[in-house]
Image (cartoon, rainbow, N blue to C red; front, side):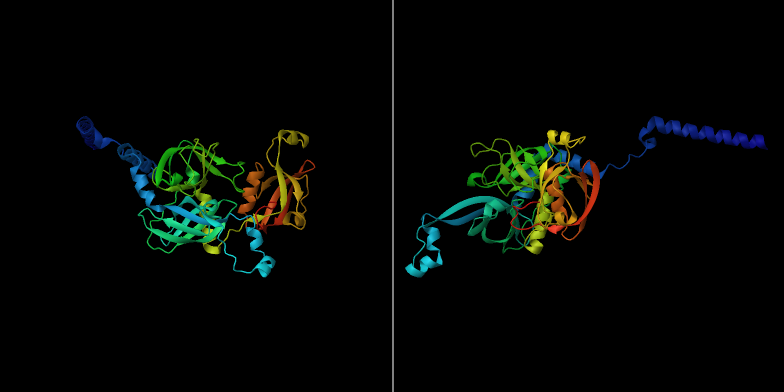
Length: 386
């Protein structure tokens, strides 16, 4: 009986092996393991690369260009050296209010902006509209609308405008934190007033600061041509999504030299949302004056590295003063986020919410000490200690 069962089993195995041999020989794909599903990001990248190889950047441009607008501003500038005197109430008391401002001449300037909501919100640079008496926005379809200022943030050089239009083509926001040096980018704006223009380049560097352009700096550097008039325009990726607001150029003669700077969309979005909700931007503040740690300072304080920020001064009755911070303390971390230098310290503090508690790690007399303080609200104007 056992011998009979073993014979049946052996025959079944032989038949199965024969079937497998035939399938392997004539239908090799049947026995191949099913390929694992490719990550979505990789599929998107492959699709994007294929589309660029076929159509260039026209798809990205056609997607983003309707969202980029031209901004024309007018400011009345007095040519009379006694202009300020004429506005003095005492002067007008004796000479009357009938004195006309005939000496004023309009000064026109231009820039660019990006539509960020279908109901008419536009993001641009603060310096584009800061001195304007009138603001006019020209859309990509040629129509024009007067704009009002919703709010500004000079510390990041951003401003939000509003036009009375509906169903506008709002741009799609990308994640600028995922961008890498070498990625292809496109700049859209209105350089020199010649009309809407697209230029192409790469991301040359990320996290540029210490440029002295804005109070809070974390720029994307690009070699895509950016010229006067491009300010406030869009820096987009190859999918047509916004990654930055073109803000400044490095130039010795006013023209592009291959070094342009854009405000990352992560910062622009935070500023835009606060301005849209509150009309202003609220930032954390602790009230200190700080300076970078130089190699010489690091040696004199017996520090292993030059990371951190030296507290050079403490504002009287500020959150830092009330918490017991002293000049000479070295700030190395805020809520466990490492402080690299004074600029990074400024950015970290700005992200804190007023009235929240923050733990500051400092080095005092060679020892590490943690100090808890209640964060204050950054005063206006912004030219105050951190």
